[in-house]
Amino acid sequence: MRRRIVAGNWKMNTTYAEAMDLVEGLKNALTQEVVGDTGVIITPPSVYLSDVVGALVDNEFIAVAAQNVHEKDNGAFTGEISAPMLSSLDVDAIIIGHSERRQYFGESNESCKVKIGQALNNELAAIYCIGETLEERQSGNFMEVILNQCAEGLEGFIADDMDNIILAYEPVWAIGTGEVATPEQAQEVHAGIRAWLAERFDAETAENVSVLYGGSCKPGNAAELFAQPDIDGGLIGGASLNAEDFTGIIKARTNA
Ligand code: PGA
Image 1 (cartoon, helix red, strand yellow):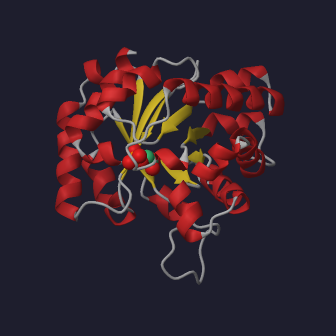
Image 2: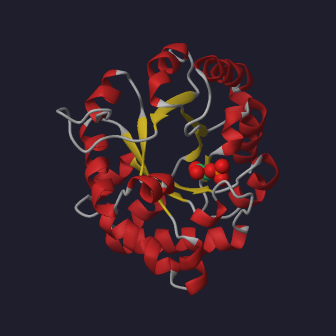
């Protein structure tokens, strides 16, 4: 059975003290009852990863991800961070191809494919983000755009690889805008992604891959999104910066 997951993407937010406070807040809030069988992932800025992993050493509920990774293992790439580095810090996962990386840093499906390979080769899970812009939604061919991101980003991977790949559908027009996709809009895309997975891999793989929704997901709208049959959880931006809000979303996932 596929995993239910709530992942928080802190983006370029928090000072060191704020980050460590947020980790403490989550450690206190996330009990077995709250978490249930929901996998919880937090994604702090990379400079804090080592200390965040350290603070969670005895915590069984919270996994830690990085927000990006470079295509290569090492070398003359000033400012970049590699998958072996993240692996050596005991990080669990990497977000790959977030729309902000695509939009502001020119990431392509092709570079995402290489980065997913880097994650998997270094025993890290990949959270691969896909989603259409407002223009693509309005033009009506958004499903084609999304499935093309799937096809190109996952090119060459086999069904077994999908055990370590999580997909996150994030309509760009809903990210940080307060404009959430309706449960029906999100479900339609998630079902389309799952049908594509069945065709590209097989029915079992399609059934087992977790597909998360992201874009203005909050404690107040999470439950109706998570009630949809193909929405396995959320990738949360703004609301993951507040322990109470993030916990509220986790509760919505656990209780859905
Ligand atoms: P948001 O961001 O929840 O602030 O809309 C979602 C994301 O970018 O992952």
